[in-house]
Amino acid sequence: MISGFILKKLNSTRLFNSKGQVQAGTLCYTPTLTLTQIKGLETDKYSSLQFAYGISKRLDKPTTSKLTKNKLKIKPKGFVEFTPIKDTDLKVGDLLNFDQVFSISDKVNATGTSKGRGFAGAIKRHGFHRQPVTMGASDRTRSTGAIGAQTPGKVVKGKKMPGHFGNTTITVKNLQVLSIDNDKKQVIISGSIPGPINSWFVIKRPKY
Image 1 (spheres, rainbow, N blue to C red):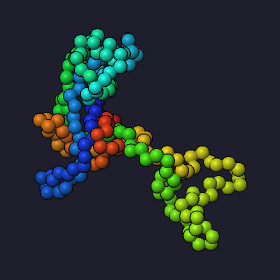
Image 2 (cartoon, rainbow, N blue to C red):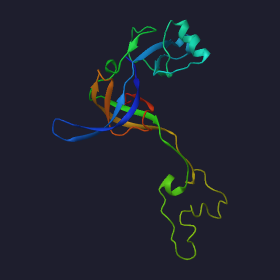
Image 3 (cartoon, rainbow, N blue to C red):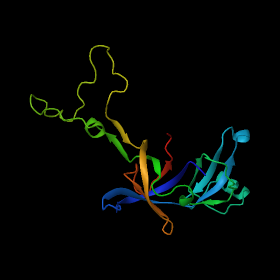
Image 4 (cartoon, rainbow, N blue to C red):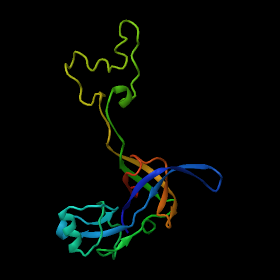
């Protein structure tokens, strides 16, 4: 079929397995994907399937023109591409559900954008300890401290410093699909997913 799927993060939850053990997971919404474009080696120099997901109130002219050309009456939030794993007979306009790609107990890697926390100091951003309050340094307790020696006379690249915290792409590996509810279009994936509630993230099969 395809290599992955796109989901919306809802909230944290938990399940009890057959042994009565608690399994922490994340409840996710599974949209119905619409195939909008088939990319091939001859025309695009790579092979992939482009799907539309979500609902948007307004679309720009290029997107509207593209959907009208393919006779698709949808207003998607965005587009996502996945690599076809095997020979598929999907055509433009076909619909794809989560249970057609993944099943319960499948291993997945989740890739999303972490929460943005703005500009943060070294304590919050990197977990530094505070400096001592004694010896006249009462106003420097949350300071970074020394950032380099006399040699080489410069700040080494990669030094942990204050700066933008969060809002980066993070991949959590080896998660598991715990349950699938086709009626509610919801699934539960083990562990925590990067990003805030109602954010979109992509899951893909691990590469062994």
